[in-house]
Image (tube, rainbow, N blue to C red; front, side, top):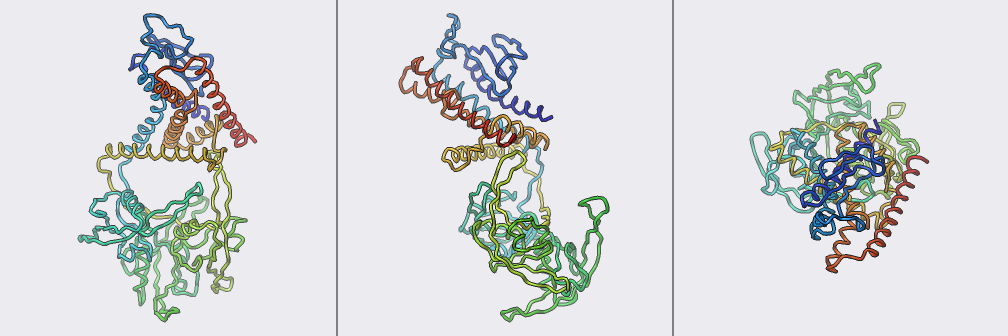
Length: 549
């Protein structure tokens, strides 16, 4: 099937590109002599009217042959007006540009097909609130529905998220609905630095709300605590406290904070199903929890139950990683990073990513063999490691080495209002973002900021087609869209023999107000072939190193 995926991928891209040239030439009344998918000896050839249509032996490319495109063509007198050289400059520009344009437009249709299949989107409803965040200080609660920001209505979470990210340091007026009542609060997003996969960073706004709730799954590090004495264990899922339903970690934390007496808890405990990995049976249980009153270092009393967020317990440690050298172990409860406490692994990871070269002081708690709890510390510095994805591309990642197996919950979803309009606007937006990302990638390679190893050839195309095809039709279509943009932009590069090179020559011709001499055009074409040849050699070299050696 890999060969089929490869031929289908290449075939679609080539046909679309050449069809752009073909349809523009036909509409402008150029004489199209041949439409070919592939190069070399024709395998299939049929004639339709004045044009030959063929599939050739080597599928990596194709061409549209127009009368008079070659300076050595013999042009019949009665068809001289339909030859390439005889047409006005603007028409030749349109025909040349139509090929890359077709590749840049194809993703719009692909994304439209994918987006129009969606019937619902995450709603602008708060799934959870991070403690100590601007949203928590503004008393935002899980379940609050965000109606508008600064007077502009909000329906979907993606719209809410985008506006928050783009308003660092600016006050936002949130209009929210909580039950039957509505109210307004002002929140100023804090700056947050997020690392990207390519080693860069982005600065965005952060208010501390999430669409997906943090499930009220608890951990118990101290078996002598009230929770441990009540029989609760790490991994138990709390579903009610004193008859009140619990849907997220924030609600559980607030309920337990107010508990000053015996508290009745209902929870689920998963039991592994023999012979079926990752499958668990949920067993409903009850517990009576009697919190203790403790005094902190500042002399303030607070309720202590011994329940910790399960996600802050280490599930696995990579051998040879910084976490391994720090002697972290599965079952340890990470509590602080440089003295800062964390309730969610997501925030811990973001903090680590924000300062990749910093040496951190990490603190954790561990249940010892005698049942006592020990507090441990170590200094940790993350390392950079190169890895390969499923497509064979090398990338650098920042490694801490400890991970959690905690899963996020599912927030509220809402039906899409106007699916076709939504799909059309999102497809154009996504295509624009893809083009922007590709242009940025090309520019990074030209400036030497991205490695030349990222350039790939036919073996990379084969691998990409095979992997994406095996992952399903949606992934395969997305890959076609991505490579189509890539192909369109490459063909617009100002290199002779490519479409971009032809556009440059036409621009020179327009300035000179006369065509270049045949000798000059031949020299330019040979220079272009030399450049393309060097790029091809580089791509083949990278393919051999990546997939053969």
